[in-house]
Length: 100
Length: 93
Image (cartoon, rainbow over all chains, first blue to last red):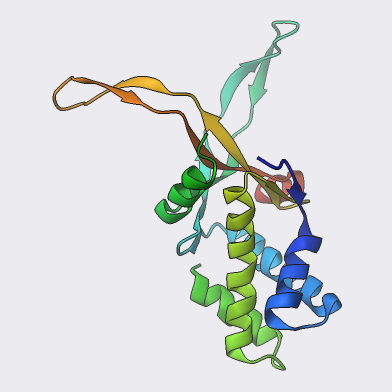
């Protein structure tokens, strides 16, 4: 493992090199893609990107939680959470690439 | 929403781009993320979330049909953690 962290900038660089758009426009497009995916999820839609994976929204019911330090009971309100399920292809690639 | 619908939306917002370029943009972004994870790297997209690789230890599993014990090797799996901004937006903040 190289333990590097990629950011938006690296994605924009890849778009710049692969598609040949300016760095500025590449960065804007990366942002638009993330924005569109986010908006669909916020609207309650799941987002399925073939050979990458599926983002879906799950409803969590209310439950009683506990402050682990004080032991005090605190209500946890119902909420929506996002889960990502990687595609088989992605799982296989990641497993193969990180073989010990 | 599926990949083609995402491409369509981006294409509508960018009428000056060719459809095939929009397809390459979307493909490049997701391939770049996958490529990073294959290398064992992380991808941190503030506000959206972070992709990383988690190690799953080897274990003794069981064939549910026969009950037979099987050794499952250690493996690495992709993992996504939702960013704070998106998590808040999902809950109406």
